[in-house]
Image (tube, rainbow, N blue to C red; front, side):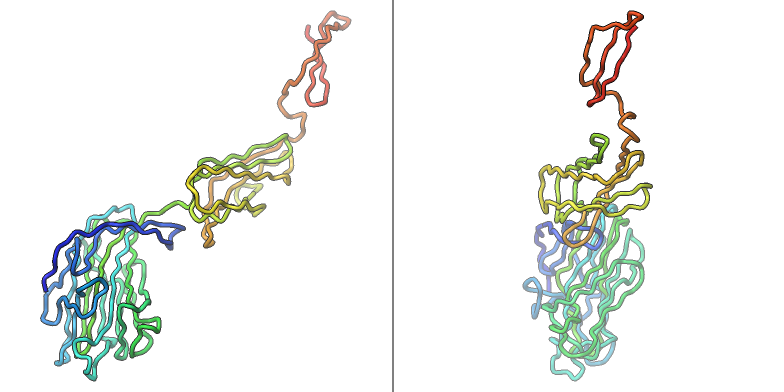
Length: 359
């Protein structure tokens, strides 16, 4: 069956990610079989492969391969050509998969076995294709596109296999792998995907749909505009910080150290959730001693428990008030002279009177 070339709309999704708190996933290439800008196709175009309308994720077609009655291996490769990508970003390849018996549902061999599998193969920067992820059948297992089981891994050059724990219909049992996902870490400038598909007996069908490639961009949960720690009246330390934006911010742990290396929790400041305007926070520490340098840092915690640490700031109270710089609050010109004819000036700092002799 011929595929019809159409324009695919690029969109953005907001999700949680394993790496930190939040990421955006931008669709950069797709093949929905009946509509695509990533032109995938069967490599050998065998008689047992093609595009069929019996089932699909997006109407009306899926790419499928089916076994035959002579018990020989039917194998082909669904090839998705190289896409130029940003090497500084992570990427995710996703596709949908169903194990079916549509070609021969009444066959005694109907259902997928361990020798029936699909393998996601990855090529980076024009290099060799490496088998990364495999979904195999087991004991005549079947499942359709509505199964919620996910087969997911981070590409590492080592083949990881997924398969059901038993035979029969696995759609509602949690191990019919309908969602296939390969996370590709940053580094390559081009990414190409092959899907190796094989079956060998009547009633053994792999159905595939909705091939997608996403670019992943990290979103900082907190955009910190400023963070300062200052001594107040040589008595306590005041921490002040301002956020320019927040995403799922549960709050801040205030951490303190007296050596700049080992920090302990001293307090909690509730966060502002989600916001994109300037927001000021303050925390005051009255438990510090004079003459000791203290180090502070903020640990921002998301609602899901993930966190981010910010830069360290230090503060030190002077040993005594006498060590503080002289701030003249009031001068009393007495107009008096000592016995040598020098002018006497009294200077008040706080409630302490200092006398100064001007010759």
